[in-house]
Length: 106
Image (tube, rainbow, N blue to C red):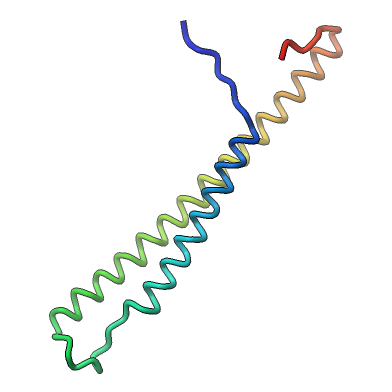
């Protein structure tokens, strides 16, 4: 027999807030990489091949942090919407039970 699903909307909101925080951190990390992981041709002690490799790494990191930020924001938004949908469903169910004269079993 399958277990009954119990959703706690407040916990969904907490996870959404955590993911929004992660999105902000990913944005900060991306900004950090863009600012401090730049090596120009004026830096004579770095060989051209190494400079090209480091530039490629910087571009990859910026892209990955951007993807992480976007995914975290989307997941947080979906969780918030899910939490609200559960609240709305619970409220509507309680109102129907009340109107029918049935006590909410929760």
